[in-house]
Image 1 (cartoon, rainbow, N blue to C red):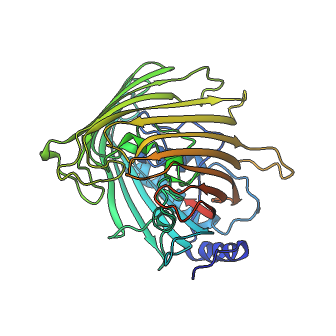
Image 2 (image 1 turned 180 degrees about the horizontal axis):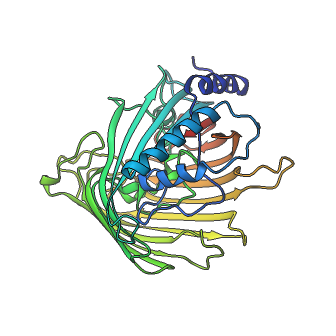
Length: 436
């Protein structure tokens, strides 16, 4: 099947998928506080758990009756009883993406579909209820395709794009892995926190709660500053200090050979290190995010082979992420991101993007928890012979019914970096998200 998926077919597939999976829930309203002292977006387990809990209290939807309500009620009550008995908090997210592209290189697919599943938990073990509380976090992730090319590879392979079209939506082999497993202690109230164990650097550094592939924007360069030369998930440590509510200083060291499929090779001595200053610039609400200024260095991988956003080469770089609320209610947010890498050490030599988000936009339905997003991205890939690539995206996300979010997205891909055969392609996506 190489034709573009049409909207009626997508809606039909959505209905089938909802019936088959009976899953449900999503990110909340206008950029609420992430709930994490260290994590930056909902790819991080601590932020993910906070989002799942917040979504349980949201009831607005396009369709008033939810077929998932009995299942949500049962699982919610079971989780509450488990927490009361053991202080173990659990959460589950299911994200599914259908994507079609209008152009592709010869003998490559033009459509794909992938499911991403995250099972997360935290176990409160010491100083429970205190600012110095300590927790053990775990995160099991699964991704699988349906006999097609995964949407992430539609961008990277079919279009020869370096910006990509669908971050996080490509199959794992094997399908499930331990993505994060770490100890975290401290809080903003304590003024400090630290994390040690298997961590994911690109869910911590230069992040925004408004930019994530499972709830807002989709392209790789549109959701991550991969100019930062991130290694993959691996052993590492993070510390953060809050001199005040408006400032935070973060330091991170992790295994440059980190690999999400295992625990990397910290014994090789290759490290990735970063320092980050976070500042709330002229915040209008308490939920305002930090603007972040980050500098990093990567020793490279032991075999010189690429992994995640690292090319395997030694080098360093810097990024800037500016975030600002444009309205007094914090529901209109702008994010500007820029980064530069030296020594060909990252996926991109340079990257920039502008994102605008409109939470709870006005409309005849008066529905809450919907979102409009617009973004433009540019990347200069580090690969030899690559050309500058551009991506424009617009999406609308809304709760189809209580417990199920639906996102319609359009992307315009201009000058895919690694080919001269395609100058422009359109990308159409339908994403559904449920959480328990």
